[in-house]
Length: 308
Image (cartoon, rainbow, N blue to C red; front, side):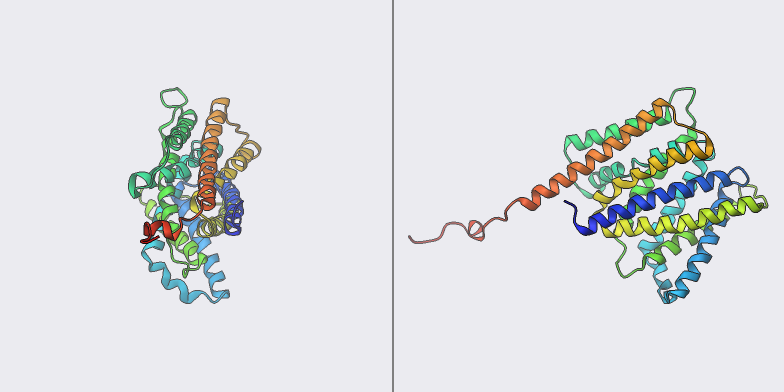
């Protein structure tokens, strides 16, 4: 059974991931009128203004000093890179396919823990990682006429998200979640304005502005929920519940953009989700076994006693 904090983290992750899919839909709608860097800049600016008002209302403006925390800054820069890669990818891909590829993040997180932090996993878990990345190849379809190099962008975003999640879990609890969210919006805005030097911006019409406002609001809510999720529960337990985003993204892709994934892509999504869910189940089983194992007796550590 999940601990209360784990259950809360899971619910926060499901809600946040689903709202992020709505944000992705707003971004894809806006991409028909303005380039990715302009979306990143304008969405970030709107989100930052809204968050600044909320921070002032809640009396948290003095906490803005925590934006200089190196972990907060590192997370914000990583998230800005993730956003730029993902927004660029959905300009040519469906949000369902791009979102599904992002779901290898928990598997990438587990692999990174082994490669960089000395963690140990079983061959079955390595097999789950391999199956998850096989699912990505079914969606990306390298070597086929359907392949587009842009499909590698969400894969790069997924690898960065694994690093971002690791950093998020290590931000001190004294830093308010709203400050982390505000820092993310500001840095993302900066990345967007930097992109204006290589992309041609256009004056947005009222409809595009409405998409950007919707994207900004959903971005704030999604960021707050997922940041809170990563800081509330065990990262290895909470992270796999990002798969809720796949269901939401497929639905939005079909209803809003009339773009259903083909059977091969659906098979790839199923493999990614199955691999992640197996990983979650294995982790929880191992934790339960460890918790149930009795602690060694103190006398056993002391060796045999003298005398009879």
